[in-house]
Image (cartoon, rainbow, N blue to C red; front, side, top):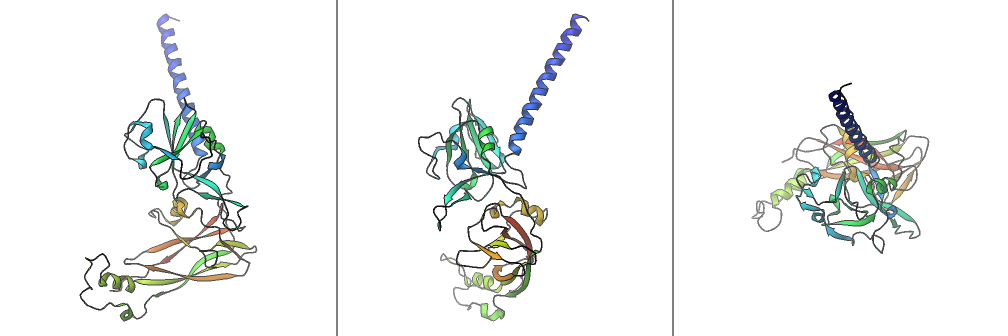
Length: 331
């Protein structure tokens, strides 16, 4: 084999090795990110399981002591694109985890000796900054509504965060449990009862309040929907209520984009993932009805869910989806 051929072969092998190494690193990063959630399965990270880099435990929200721009030479506010266009400082790595949420254990208000798990913020998505030289990382999420990051925490986030994920049972189907609309009616069956006098304030909205016309339109297009949650199955279930003093189910409306259908919306609307800690038992053969009030000014459908569990606990609930049409068109 000639010298030129040997040189070409060595270059080929070297290039092939670099490609394989790059692919292996990419797969490794994909693997740890997959452990930290996907679109239809949010990963909940337990703050209590992370090792604090401070002398005292992390206390939310008092430990937001560094601004986000700390980690950048040039910083642009683009959280929806993982800070695209920003330039990291030397020695800093950044990761975006769109399907991860941070949570913490809190004492139960009614039983302080019991700890319950609750999320920090109402939406999914964590941003992570890692400084290998210091062996520290920091966290931030859009829904925290604070200007600083939480940290430092000790270790490599690719390892520490994966080990702090709270196990989930996944979605469950409660056979025989139904959520349906019973009836609808206008809040003011007689439209004249909703009318506002045609006085000087009827079209006036210049004094820091709604005009009479606006109040009238809201009243005219307010409607009441009666809903029913029924257990036709063989096992008792628990449903979340609006408050400890109420038996009324806490139905949570889905607010995400529904262009791909309600089932997809159910998977990606995370605001209903974790609710309150008030539950009622619904035995086989039992049902409960309740009413909810809305306003609408165009044709459409409302999607909502009831939170169910096989134990009176709000962690890892199952979401039961239902819809009802809106009433509109009165002037």
